[in-house]
Image (cartoon, rainbow, N blue to C red; front, side, top):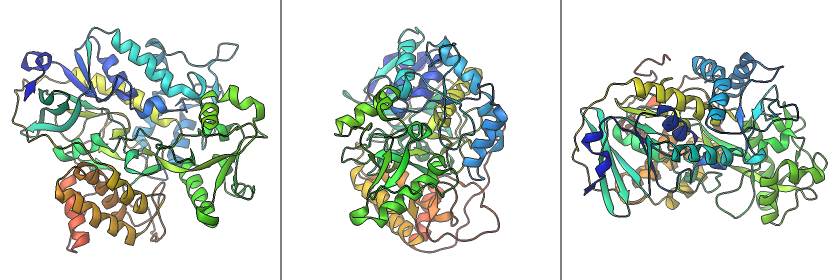
Length: 528
C-alpha cells in the first residue's frame, strides 16, 4: 500500500472532507485557514446531487415571511417526526447561510429593485425559495464554491480517490482506506467529515447521480456509527418519465408557477387533494403512483404547463426546457410525462446539531447526515439549506475540537468496487413509494444474503438492508414511509436509532424469528 505523503502524521491537524457537494464545499471553505483536504471520486463538484438541484435554498427573507412560518411549514411536512430544536436552529440560520454563500461569491437571482427574487414551492406558505441562475441553482452554487475552494491556499483537493472504509482505533477515527488509480491508499486522519450525499442510486428510478448508493452511510455503518430514520426515502413526484437513467428532475417550481398534473385522459386528478399540485411531496408521489396504476400498462401521468406558462416556459425554466426538448418534448405545447423517482434520503448517520456522530473524530453534514430537520418527509428546498447551515456548524465544531496524533493503522483488504445493479431491482420492488410487510420481509431476506456473501454487492446491499429493516420496524405509515398494511396507532412511534450490527441482528430475527427489542433512544445529547 502507498501512503499519501502530504497527509501523513506530519499533518495531523489536517481535516479530511469526503465529498464535494454543497455541504463538503461549505465545510472546507468555512474551516479556512485551517488545512483541509477534500477527497472526491470525480472532479471537484462532480457526481453530486447538489450540482443537479433545480430548486434553490429555502430562507425566510421576504417581508411577509418569518422564521416561525418557515419552521411551521417544515414541521408540517415532517409529519410529526421532526426534531423541533433542529428545525428552529436550521430555519433560523437560513438568512445567515444566504449571506455566507454570497460572501463566497454566489450571485443569487434578484428583481429589478435589487431584492432577492423569491419563488414558491410545494407546502411552503410563502414565497421563500432563493435561486441562483434560475432552475440551475445547484450547478451555479457548486460552480462558484468550487472556484472559491481552488482559490483557497489552505484547501487541497485529491480527485479520483474513493473511500472504501473508515479506519478506527479504540472507537475513534484513525484513518481511511481508499481506492485510487495507483492502488489502495491508507490515510492517517483523526478528524473526518462525511459529506457524501444520498442513496438514490439504489433505485431503478432516481434523480441522483447513478453511483450514489449511500456510500457515507455504508462507511459510517461499517465503522459502528449510530444511524437514524433510515426508512424515510423521499420520491420526487415529477421526474421525467424516460428510459434515461437517472431520470431528469422536473422541478416543483414548475407546479409553483401553476402547472397541473393530468392522467392519460387529460383529466386533472389533484384538485380534490388538500394543497393540490403543491401538496407535500409524499402526498403527490402517492397520488401519481395510484393514478399510474389505474392506466393500461402502468399508465401515464403528465405535468401540463401549457396554460400556466406556455411560451414563457423556456425563459423561466431554461434547464428543464432543454431537458424536455432533448427527450423530444416541447413543454410549451405538450404535457410532460412524469413519474416518481428516488430523490432524497431523510435518514442517515445520526448527528447532533454540531454534526457530531457517535464516533469520536467523525462528523457528517448534508444528505448523508440525519439531524432531525426533515422528520418523515423533507420540505422542498430545505436540503441545500441544511447542507449550507450544517457545513458552517461542522466547520466551527471541527475547528474547536482537539487534535489527536494518529499513526497509520492496519487496514483490511481493499473491498471490491460496488456492484449496485443487482440491488436496484430489490430496492425498487420492495422499498419504493408503497411498502408492505410481505415485501419488506422478502427484501430483507434477499439483501441479507448479499451482505453475508461479502462480494461486490455487499456494500450497497447493506445500505438497502438498513432501509428495509427500519421500514419493517415502523408498522404505521408516516410521511414518505407509506405502508399498504399500515397499523392504526394512537400516536406516532418515535424516531428509530440503530447501528448496522443491531439492524443485521433484527434482519436475522425477521428471517429466522427470535426475540428482539430495537433501540429507540439516542445514546448522546442532541443539544446544539
